[in-house]
Image (cartoon, rainbow, N blue to C red; front, side, top):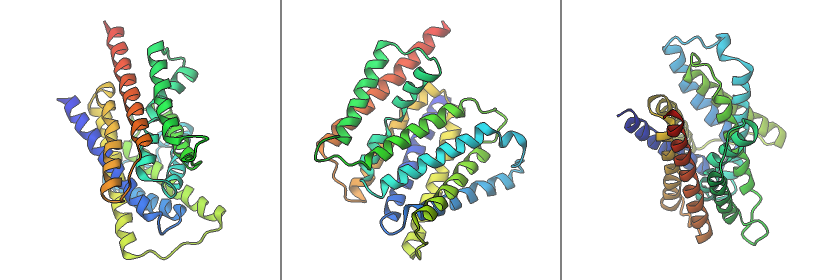
Length: 291
């Protein structure tokens, strides 16, 4: 039952993240990406700060401000900046498809820097998954856009963030970690505005509603994914992360009027299949190791 609850929470989180991305995509049509990050970071950080104060969590306890946690927040902020810049320039469905390469990048980093053993099957799956990424990005062809590389950079950053998360003390509050992440969004957005020489644009009523939607769904998704990883087994609930692509493409088509081409759909299929196989293979290896 815990794994069922965890799977449902992961699916809900992916719907929340996809919905927040949709609102951010709409915001970048009229506002500078830096201003979008400032608004999202401020709104979501306020939500988690309210929870921290309500639960009397010691926000400034030394365990909450270790170099590892600060590096994690910085990595997440940089990744969020790259993803938001990409959303302002390419379709949501394309960005979501490329971002699904994150689990594959995580496996690659674990093999290269953490000494994790990766057999030929998983190396083959990684190759197929990255072939799917190339099919979507199409380097050297007419459909290529360098902006898609921003999503790949964001996926790399999130993979590094997840590696850093593995070593966090269990006594560290998830609400504080979320607060730090969104505070990083606010700071990175402000830096982006300053260095680009852009000024704040007056926000219309519809954009205020989109800000509220992005902050609410982003915060709810963040809480859901953290809770899911604590309720269910990671190997059981992780494959449901790929539902984010389904939700993002559905929102892109129905709300934003996007029309993913055959290469994007085919590449998405390769990435998802490779990622699912990698998860299942890791789960089988973990079970075999406990026997």
